[in-house]
Length: 273
Image (cartoon, rainbow, N blue to C red; front, side, top):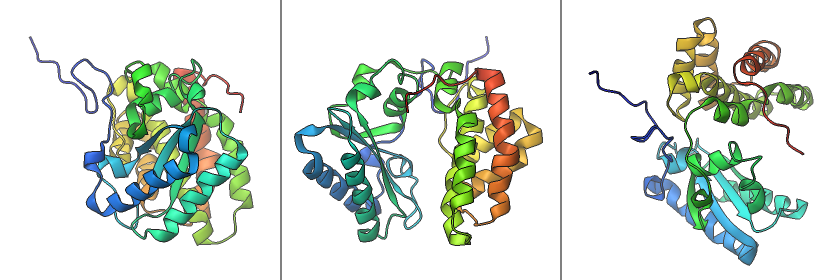
């Protein structure tokens, strides 16, 4: 009998393995992680339920001066606008103080939302599989294990059609300079590559967070769009400020991907916000 070979990112039972660990944080980024942890405690105190790292820093693949610091914070109650202003200011301060990072951002939610039925296969999956515990009680203990199936695909990225009009507004409102457009190119490139990957993820039956690998996996199933996705993966790391790239995302690749995603997996359940 042929041996069964499990795809990357899965454990021996076929569940998505949690990526990242504090032990994998590169030495150059440990000071900023320590300061972020301490400041979150100072800012929220007893209101803080837990905090997490995600992205390239806990995966150990971050590049000094190029990678950003990504945090997720769970409060014991729903956050306020003042709380969002607080974490925005924290990110700006960390970015100024630590040249090792290129930006810092914090996702902020209440504990109840992260554990809600509505978010179980989106934010819940994100916490359980892509977030590394930094402070407090780990919410993954209250969440199921996840396979790379169509339900996860639908609930994580099945809302691209709703996002595209907002993207067009952001593009129309951005300053007409390469420097102003680069962050948009980086963000949209990454989002499209990840959406393309999760489109085919159940067929591939594995998980990766590497943009290049995501693009290659996608291209194996949609060769006619492979070069576009490979180019987007490159721009996700080294963005240009070319306005033609942004137009292609919202006029061509994005609409095609949204339509194909809805055909294959359906549309993400509506959120109140």
